[in-house]
Structure formats: C-alpha cells, structure tokens
Length: 122
Image (cartoon, rainbow, N blue to C red; front, side):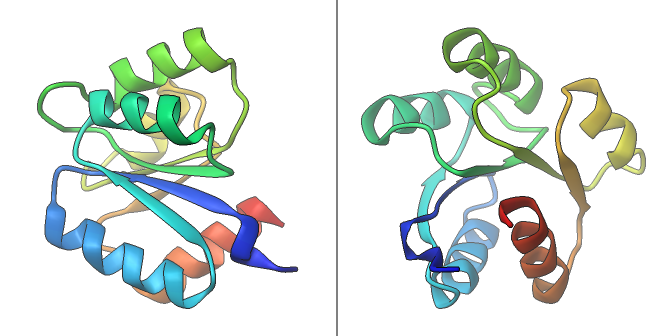
C-alpha cells in the first residue's frame, strides 16, 4: 500500500516527542501534521481536512484529549480512527472512555508505533 497519501495528525504537548514521531512516520511515507493541544488539532483539521489517523495525547493544556474527542465527534462524526498516546497506567480505560480504536502506553518504541499505525490503517 502506498502510504504517501495517508495523513496522520499528531496531537501532544511534548514537542520533542512530536518531532520524533513525525520523523519516524515520514520515513514510512506518511504525511504528518502536528498540534500541541486539542484546539490546535481542530484548527489543523479545519485547514487540511480530516486525517486518516489521529494519534492523541490525553493530558494537554488549552484543550485535552477528552474535550478534543467530543468536539471532533460533534463536528466530523467518527470519520477517522483515533489512537490514544498516554502515560496513564490505565491507558486501555482511557482509550475506551473516548471510543478510541487503540492506544499506545508511553513510553513506547518506534516499532510498536509503526505496528499500531500499520494495523489501524490497513
């Protein structure tokens, strides 16, 4: 499958982590957009359209993952999969709270990231 046309939106307030993940995903030919909080993510989606996948941190300033998920669903329905990225011990519970398609417990390695993204987008 040609990943080049697949877009991924990364939403996390840890800028270094965003850049690391962006670099990794771009090496696999994904088109990657970044946002530092839920409000930036909504702004990004309104500019570039709904991505093929959203990788979403839950605890962020301005607008957290829960609020983003609700506003995204209200505005766009559930039109793309969401994978939660969280350091919370109960990451599975967190992902179920918003109906996410999967979750990545922080810290995660790039192999786990790639496998998760691939399985969701295949």
